[in-house]
Image (cartoon, rainbow, N blue to C red):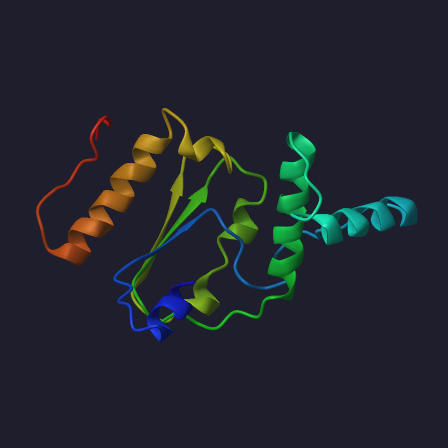
Length: 153
């Protein structure tokens, strides 16, 4: 998305990566798994994702799997802009989600934050995420310390 914004003439002062796998299919978990019948069902569900109305957890899981399938086919291009990478330290995939060095050629930093992939964005862990993002935004904008309303820093 940052590359697309820049190509459209927009300035991308800071790219923030929240506990994501690098764009390398070797580091991403497979989108489709299991035996032959399960794989056929998963492929069928992927094809119908967003077309056939559905609600609940199954709908979320299909969109998640579709995202994983698309991610495994995406070939990333190195980013030369400023980047902040935040990795959930309590997540079993944290090592794979930390392998961004080959894709970031500009100024960048990586920090491990408390929580797992979803828990890092919930209290009390989100306070650390907000503090790190705010510090990067301050550095980019050249202003003093900015603290989001409602969070103790």
